[in-house]
Length: 456
Ligand code: BES
Ligand code: MN
Ligand code: MN
Picture 1 (cartoon, rainbow, N blue to C red):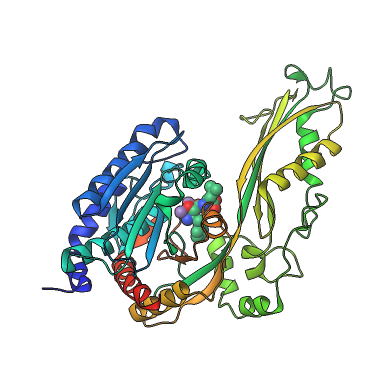
Picture 2: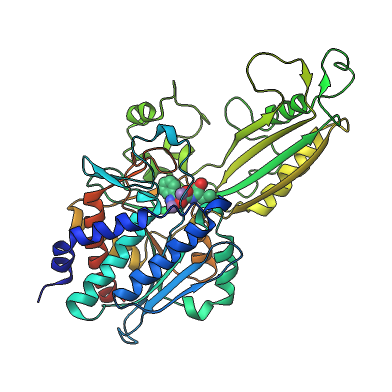
């Protein structure tokens, strides 16, 4: 008889081979051409969960991509119930020519598995499925009641899950939530994320003349939508990074002295960080540190700008329309709906009647998690037992839309226990996952579930 940790150790190559199968499915949620593939990833997960003895394995259809649910609820009424969340959808792999090996043909180089979704989030969510397997195969039981909810729409805003939660409160009822979809500080240095930014994205479409016009014949008498767009964009933010939309900062919860101290001690190597970005210089709000700027302050960025003639050579034309994609990252207690409204009011107040504008948008709420909860302490202990290094607390600048709902709606103390690394290139070409972290993650999960049972 082996222990769960021994079982996981002895089955490493099987577990990795299974992860490779999962990674071969191109479950790109945003691309309609991959709808079937995304569904196939959900089915693959259900089969893999049934095989290890998880129960009530179901897929639930949503308007876009299915949700996968499974549980094992025989640990007894005294034992806590843990809801494990993750996502099986991935970002588009483009531009393909920048990949050193094809994105959906996983390969190992220098201890990393390279594939789209390896770190975000297939490799990380699979860790907990394998930890459950280790318990079920080695002990025939789990130390806690376990539920899984794995979605296929995280990378497109989690709308289906957002609607599902209020309709399935009993199904999802638990004592805490566990999410592995973030990164550690570096190799061997675990990090517990206690803050996530929200987001608000707006697509701005401006139209002027009914068709492209000769810029000599008509120029001077017609407002150019690209000029109007540029004028709007220039007024959204000043040179120092301060956002100029009236009311934008009204609900930003000021950082406490204690939190600023915590963040000031966060071991970010600014020089190395700058090198990794390839940018010439660090930039941003002068009154906030780099760590604060990238994790605890809201942002506004133009992420795409389209219009006019962009082919080779010159063309003297007044474009008939202009399009911009705006992305704002939000912090507590900003609300994406309210921010979208403020943005639109401001844009309408700036744009003259010589152009027409339409705007669409969406978003997700930020999250800030109590650092002093029993699951958080168990997570810190499990991390330390595995990595022999204490975990640091950090805020993450990215977003995981559902976490706010876990905390504020389902009232689940949530643990963000990531196993990614800063150089994983998530969303970029050559995404990778550090294979030793896959195995260490399984070990950490095994320890965490046992520690969790003891703390309740
Ligand atoms: N796993 C990421 C969030 C993340 C990013 C964690 C960076 C740690 C470091 C998640 O899959 C993600 O990419 N979220 C999107 C959400 C958006 C599409 C609503 C994001 O932050 O852009
Ligand atoms: Mn993710
Ligand atoms: Mn992602």
